[in-house]
Amino acid sequence: MSDLILFWHRRDLRISDNTGLAAARERSAKLVGVFCLDPDILQRDDIAPARLTYMIGCLQALQKQYSQAGSQLLILHNNPVIGIPVLAEALKAKAVFWNWDVEPYSQTRDIAVIDSLKAQGIEFLHQNWDQLLHSPAEIFSGSKTPYTVYTPFWKNWITKPKATPIETLPNFAGLTEQEQEIAQQAGAIKLPSAQDLGFSWDEELIISPGELAAQKRLEIFTKSAINEYQEQRNFPAVDGTSQLSAALKFGVISIRTVWQATIEALENSRSEEVTASIRTWQQELAWREFYQHAMYHFPALSEGAYRDSFKNFPWRNNEAHFQAWCAGKTGYPIVDAAMRQLNESGWMHNRCRMIVASFLTKDLIINPQWGEKYFMQKLIDGDLSANNGGWQWSASSGIDPKPLRIFNPASQSQKFDVEGEYIRRWVSELRSVDSQYLVSGNILPLERRAVGYPAPIVDHKKQQALFKEIYQQQKVGVV
DNA sequence: GCCCAATTAGA
DNA sequence: CTAATTGGG
Image 1: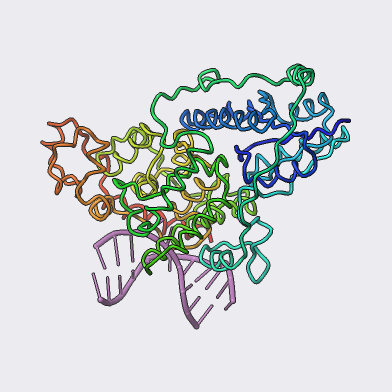
Image 2: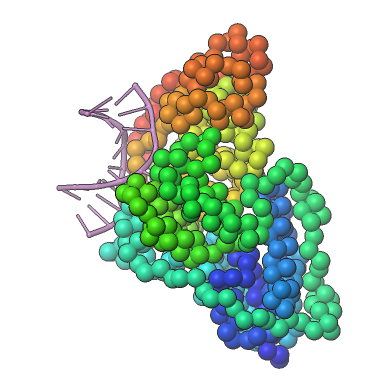
């Protein structure tokens, strides 16, 4: 057995400030990275080409980082339950390290990998929670149960001391040429392109792949937009959000580094407003952790509604309505603009994610799981915990009990897209329509026909009343 | 600005 | 018993 340690990257596609990798480096200088392109994941029907393309770009950048550090990042195209132990065995690695994850699929998979490594007498280490500031084992309510309400979670979470970024690691020693050949025989391949894997995305990505781009984005955001975040984050036509979601999903940037940047921003704050804005963004990071903890403690969330009152909800599930929603042809300008932004850019502003989710569930009365899946098929940042949390929040079916949330598309655009700038940007046929009609959604049928824009597929007022009626009726049956 | 939302976790 | 992200009318 050699001194070699394999570090298995999953959603931590970077070298710097990586807890598991730092632990591995402490143990041995001979350190090689590995990433598995898992066919079980790639064959799923909810993979967004934009996300896959971004991920491949991040892997490319990571390979470069490894080579600069004096080592290699190996790529496997195999089920990790087989691929990782086979590679470890072939290279006579003494240990495999990785960072833990909350998703049910990951947990089951990791346990299978551990079993298989154990059988070969290879050590494993996975206790690091690199992607969270606080692990699900750290934050509990007074009754020692996981929080199911955000606000008390936040109050507790924010009082806990946060880890600071890890210092730069000393260089690694990689594989010899002979060992590289052995790795190839054990399945290591050249990094394929997204096209090689059957995904094509020709549009620009909202964020360039790799750690450098993410760091730059963080720097820009925490120098300017974060200071007005509380207000500006609500306007989809404005770049008022960090747009770091994809980088955080793949761990291209470390959450400790991100947190550190918010602390520095707070120190530089000169006004109550700015401080409140930075706090608000910190709360968004806490929401991310809240939903990841929830997924860890209540994995059934991934299969559908958390609340009983929604478990057997009689969704209408009209296929034609769903197709219109997907295509951005509902006849509701703000909804259509948002869906077209998603389809065309692989990203959607968060305000709009709430608007279209409310519209799908409360106006079209379609199962939120349909929308959740469609988002995963399109989003560059698509992440089970965050996406599921957001959808259950919108559907009122999740943890964190609240009144039914029914957004009025007209008042939402009147408040947050006052001049119709966002709508015009994404719904080209409406560009010449007067703002007043555009934003209220009260576009005359004649004008709709003239510009080739569809009539509303449902009536908001009727549908929200219908939804409430169905909800009240079926709730009685649940108890 | 005011009330209603609708349920319950959490102290 | 109170309080509850981003609302609606």
